[in-house]
Amino acid sequence: MNVRSSSTGPRGRSFTCCILLLLCVCGAVRPARAADPEKVHGITLSTHTNGSDWATGDVATTMSEMREVGAGWVAIHPYAAIRADGQVRFRALERGSLPEHLAKPIREARRQGLRIVLKPHLAYWGTPFRWRGDIEFHEAPEWERFWATYSRWIVNLAAACPDVDGFVVGTELDRTLAHEERWRALIQAVRAQTGAPLTYAANWTDYQRVGFWDALDAIGIQAYFPLADRVGAGPEAIARRWDERMRELRAYAAHHDRKIVFTELGYNRAFAAPVRPWDDELDGAEAEQVQATCLRLALAAIEREPSVVGAFLWKWFPNPYPVGRTYQLATPRIKRAISEIWLE
Image (cartoon, rainbow, N blue to C red):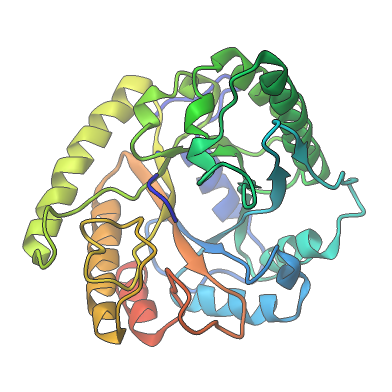
């Protein structure tokens, strides 16, 4: 993970109202939580590989364990590959005949009473880009190729999965934000394919550069905000930093007349997690207490803040759980930290 961002929108909806409606009409199996129904208690179901494990039977037990800690929402992040010349390569999908790695998590979420969000990610591995925030081009043909193929991928995904409960039109594409008209055209094309609430997942450093929030239903932020200036800062200092950050976000949300959803929120098992939440370096097992404290304080701050509608925690892998993976949520201590807030 690298450094990472009411009234109704153009179609007369707000993200919060959609959430309330969806929670009211959910099926017989309901998330095991007694929380504010306006809050999104979400977890990202990640993957050991390229998403192929979403097609396995482990998805059912994994989602069941998510529900046990209080999750009511799940996000998956299907991939397309980006090349250095701007080409986005993807497998075209057809509505009604989805590959099982997409069909199964959607079907299983429905069966278990979970709401599901699609959050597409560009796979940049093997390119000059160090992460998604580096993706940019210097020649007009490359930009044209990028926007044509990226738009086709996103619109195809929305058209093939029109009944999901939320859709993210882009993730951490910081260096594309100046192309506002391209983004607006893409959002309009996605709206023609799905009635799901839409957002964009902005880097925490760049969410104020997004010029098209009015075209979306919520402000989406990858919430890797630093919570301390030094390693070893105590819970009181971290809580104060969250209070300061929430005041800023409250003002920003009011200015744009939108609620905020944290499209990602996570902390590594590291002593430096409060200082650099995005850092992938793992420390020993004793650092898990720092990770748990950061997560608990973040979730408590969200529950208190009306301008932030909720968060999707990063990240939970399908069973069997990998050993030594970064941002691992499915450990006894971290699950306890989540449930203490979401199930209280």
